[in-house]
Length: 157
Ligand code: B12
Image 1 (tube, helix red, strand yellow):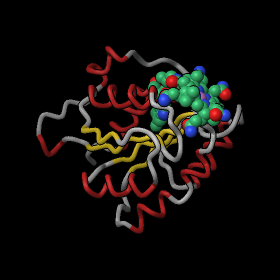
Image 2 (cartoon, helix red, strand yellow; image 1 turned 120 degrees about the vertical axis):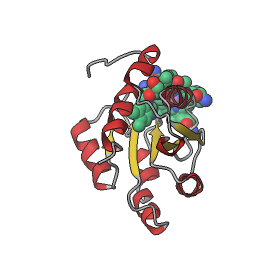
Image 3 (cartoon, protein in one colour; image 1 turned 90 degrees about the vertical axis):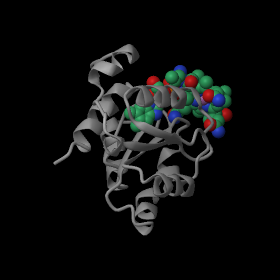
């Protein structure tokens, strides 16, 4: 995947949210029993620097915690990381939980090492799209890619 920039470049690609009502809120976390913390810190830093209001739940986050935080913060998107290979089990049902809570339009992105080992990413992506995620990212995706997608997906129509 082509590199689109460095963390220092975030200000260049970031949207300008001057008005308070324009601020986009994201709920961020590492799902399940997953303790991998470093990528989460980088995502939190990069997304915050880009001007998003980030509610970072850290590691070992349950589906319930994602949904509750999204309701409380009136979030526009849920950004899920899964690093330890159990992403499919941990993520299954999250879209349904959002729907049950009335979060019908909330965007859901997921990335990290979603499955065990190296599997065909097109197949992995299909599985997670079918689960209701709007975007699915392969291992090591630069957070700037997701920032570009958030700009596109949340652009005023
Ligand atoms: C450090 C580490 C640990 C530490 C974590 C310490 C901590 N608290 O953070 C410890 C030792 C605890 C650990 C434990 C385990 N680990 Co570990 N760990 C690693 C290691 C070496 C580095 C992870 C890291 O910090 N990377 C640096 C950060 C910056 O990168 P990142 O996490 O990939 O995140 C970036 C991107 O992926 C991306 N990203 C992440 N999420 C998302 C989401 C979106 C939407 C987007 C756009 C982008 C994005 O942006 C992030 C920032 O740039 C990796 C191997 C590796 N080289 O990656 C294995 C690795 C992740 N671990 C692995 C495994 C298997 C485990 C264990 C299950 C091992 C075991 N049998 O016990 C346990 C699981 C424990 C648990 N319950 O979570 C595997 C996962 C394999 C898989 N998925 O198939 C890896 C890949 C090692 C390997 N090659 O086998 N681990």
